[in-house]
Length: 215
Image (cartoon, rainbow, N blue to C red; front, side, top):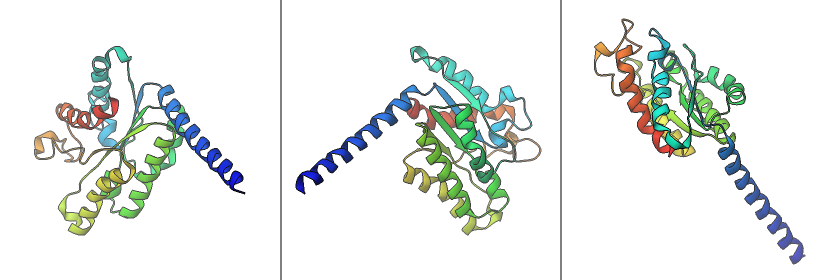
């Protein structure tokens, strides 16, 4: 009986080790690609796509990649996207563009529509887990809401990104628009979308969270 239990324990340990080694191998074999998965704030709404922060990220990576090889950026962001919409199409994007890194920058439209924070969290968590299952490293990019949505909702909304990043042990940029939010001149006439001139500031902000994951 003791020998049987010992044999099963060894098999379990071997299985666990094989799973770890398989995950490491999958991550190493992934193409050197960053998948940006966001909404209009990442899709370049109202400006030329080439001026959007993901496009600027692609240019920056051409010079930063060095001898390690070029890193491709695929921007799969869609204007108006919610976390529910993102969750529904992420698997297809992960299959079509297998990434080594995934930037999830969704949630703004959930907040603007007053959608339940619990549902947003569940969607983001599912996306993070799906990306990690494919061997990708994840950067979660958060959002904040104007105070007119009420203190309870805005605090719960903002805290979701921080607590989820801590729970899933992924990278975090707490607020995408942090470097530009204080000046109205950084936004288009709609007051929601950053201008082309503001995009480099946003890129630098995202880069601060992404670079440690690249290393």
